[in-house]
Image (cartoon, rainbow, N blue to C red; front, side, top):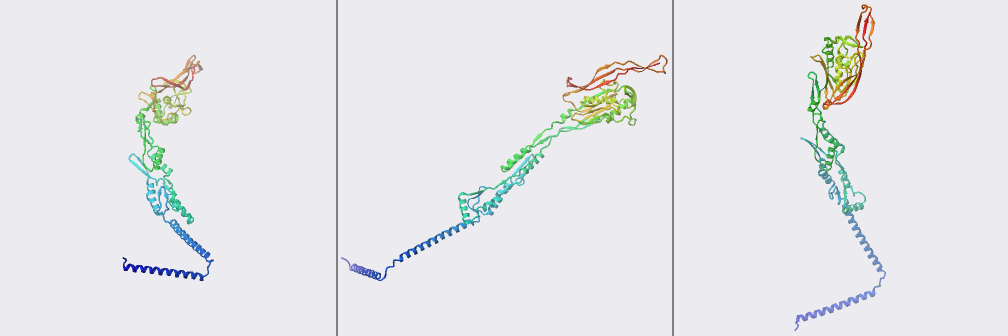
Length: 498
């Protein structure tokens, strides 16, 4: 059984549907009537299409302009960025997004200042010297490179700058700082000065004086030296600076002297001496000999110097204390001031030749003398004949000359003694004897009739050769050399008669 309420609803719905159908029919009828009343416009369709195209184009243009403006704003923002562009690296540091001042301050404080303060410390014993890279001429173009990195990509059109920025973001852009860690010339000056400070020549022990009264040398002691290889020190410092600095222990090599006090004192002493007898000399002759010895005594003959007897003794005059004594003149016996000093020149010449001095000038007497072998004498005359010799050794020679209490003329030469105990002898050898010539007779009316008087004894003549002979310490002859030759003229006896 259907309720009254449901029946009412059914009736309402049917009535509404009927009214709706009636309304639709009315509207459709009105539309058809209106269509029959208005004519059809066929030309309006193209206009509508054109309008739609224009509207679409304008919309597209506006859209493109909007997008271009947005891109422009983005490029402008990128280009005008007041920091380093992305992808910018300086010496391996990524500075993207940092301001110019930030990078400069960082570089100055954290990189360049420490590099300037690096250096080399030289130590030698208790002393130490530090030299910084800044003191050695350190230079860096970091400010220039930072400015270049900042300016890079900030020139050209907006599009060019933007493209560069985007390329940098993907590919990166690297800048390198150039540095000169030190100036080689400045470093060389430092290392050379340090090497020079610790380089000192060794000093050999040597002669400081000769005490003629004691006949002894005094010596200066040897001094140790040291050496620093300047080139090696420079190379060490250079390598260390390139590696960031550090410490160098300066290698000081000791240098020992070649000659020590002990060795030099053993090598210096009396080289040789020569002795001649003057025991038969008169007091006047001995006075002359002593004066000549005093003039010679104390002479220091330097290497390469030549000794002159006449130049040292000077004129033999009465004013200087010389006395008249026997002399030999042209083969005859005479009296003159300074008689006897030829014994001093002879003794000195023999000592000098035994000391290996070079013979410069020497003359033999006209007749043989009693105090020395033939060929070993050396006469002097202030006006015409001198005796000279030269010190060809490397060391000074000191000459001591005196007359002993036993009336011996002694000349000693002190200096650097021959090595290995070697010594020298002087030998005079007669090479020819010339017989006494026949007498020479001279009539003397002061004599008694038949009387004969010999006024001069005849004498033989001689020729002699003088040798310098070198011996080893065990008395074996090493070599010999000819020093000079001598000729002592023969003389005929002289007889007066009546």
